[in-house]
Image (cartoon, rainbow, N blue to C red; front, side):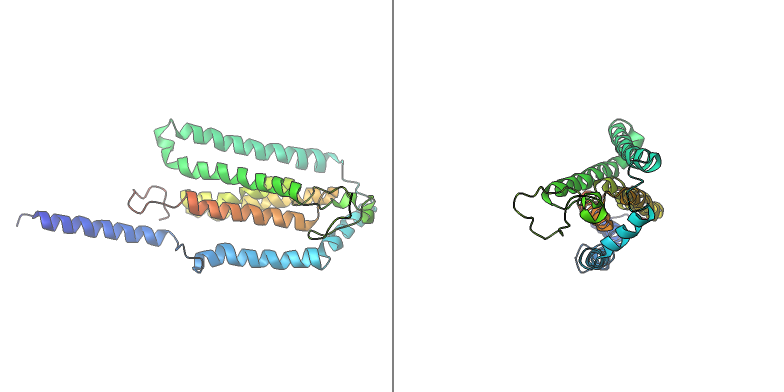
Length: 265
């Protein structure tokens, strides 16, 4: 029996609906009470809040810095060491910048090479997320007033310690060590988790691991030099993760009626 226009229309509608339902299952719900936001926002922020309380309000920062300082003979002996200063600090910063320029080059190539077009939006997301995360951390360093450990009387410096929400005495020069800028050059790459979640889901945990490992190495290097407390690194991680998460919901949301392309299978 020949197909009628009505039957063809019904078949097309059913096909579109089926495809949309498959795509919806591939992408988590957007409600802030959904399990996706619980895993990616509320649980990480709860851990961040508890660790911030432990480090900043209960003396955890000073407890760890005291031991690093004593380990080096009550001095920041590693402050100018070749490995910590030249390789992990200067070299790490150069490596992070090089990674960003590699992503930029790939994004520009995707504008010209047809086979790279499907990577265009994930690459644009990764480029913007890493840049914005480090820029926000840099801006916060100018807004806050906290000093580096090496500036403090407790560790051989000439300044008293004032917490994040303390008011400085009139005429006292504000510090610019919070959050940790160098650690953010590593933690900004936690955006690789969402990049791979969109482009190659099986690798998303590897992407997260890369970002966390880079941030940890950069952060520990600076703590050994007396440049930062652990909480400075923690806040850089929280900022980087939040930026990556929010931008992923803005830039990587797939069109349910577009070809599946890079969507999670």
